[in-house]
Length: 474
Image 1 (cartoon, helix red, strand yellow):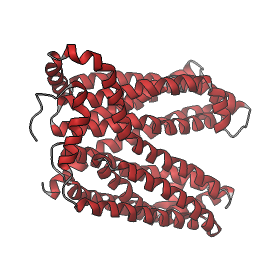
Image 2 (image 1 turned 90 degrees about the horizontal axis):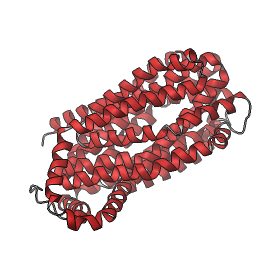
Image 3 (image 1 turned 90 degrees about the vertical axis):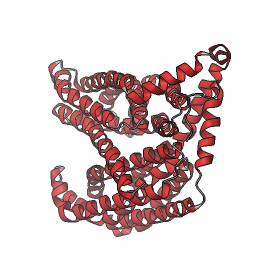
Image 4 (image 1 turned 120 degrees about the vertical axis):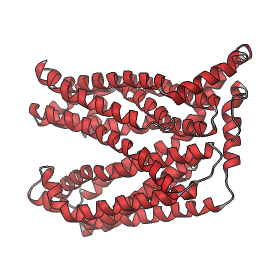
């Protein structure tokens, strides 16, 4: 398969994911804009609640990301039983995780609000508790949407999740003023508007699942194959569900760990930056939000590489090295564009976020020093998709955890240089992570692992319900 075809398919898969990720951030911004009319306490409450939701995203990534890879691999193998098993595994995990988070979060909403606000009382604590009383039970909808998106992406459809995210944002934009100001519900109104908007998008997502041709054909083929085996399959159904969930968890857990480790490292870095000064902390926070525009492009490319790699491996074709070269080309170009943009427009970016004086100056300096780190980050994150799609994500998660620990140690040691020292620490730690992933990439020169991957897919997915007679040879 030619390089141009790989590159074209990666871009086709990645750009809707990028718009979807941007839409997710926009939802939080819309809420912040409307609750800003209620005062600083309301803004603080919604801000910390949004951060908690971002952290909880790492929990459901176990189901969403694992389902994406397994569905993509089954699609490539043209194995309807494997695809049905992958979808089922994602929903079983959702059913196991959601009650713990939604019910447990609701019962612990006040201690959680106190924790994320640093123990401060006052209006912010009460408002955050009010927001959590709606948002945490509503996390069930957010989690279900993530699973629906994972299934669709695994089936090769990244555009529908993008459309669903845009739909949810449009509804939030219209419902926020109605519930926050019109019905005078305050921050609770923001939470209600968000949950209702996501619920409508989720319903549309279920309709999209039903209409998806790949999923519908796979379901029909799997049901036909199992029709004559229903009597003997019934006693093993519970065991099969458990096996489906374990496979999805084993596939998605390393990706979830990678995401959580990187988020936790970014939050921990705030404490190191605080040693420099208050203005630097504010600048770091604003600049980090500005970076989302670039880093989300890296993560979109990562998802595209994961889907593409898993699909081709399922089809019996080991194209990891070819995909990796195109991913590096695209990621390097994106990172270089980010570097040049930050060098040229750092001060204007800070002003666009409303910063002035010392904060604006510190933020502009930070953004201008951040370029080398972003180039390395782009390559590391995007290349990670190749290893996620091929089942090597546990090693990738270990690299990330070690890299974040090294970054914090270096940042502490170099904090005397100010924000440029922080940027240097981030770049050095990321350079070592890139060296580690480059070593993993060189190992793909070994004989193709296609036979192993496909045999593993057969034995681990189709055995619980019996072999699928409809499976075509690869």
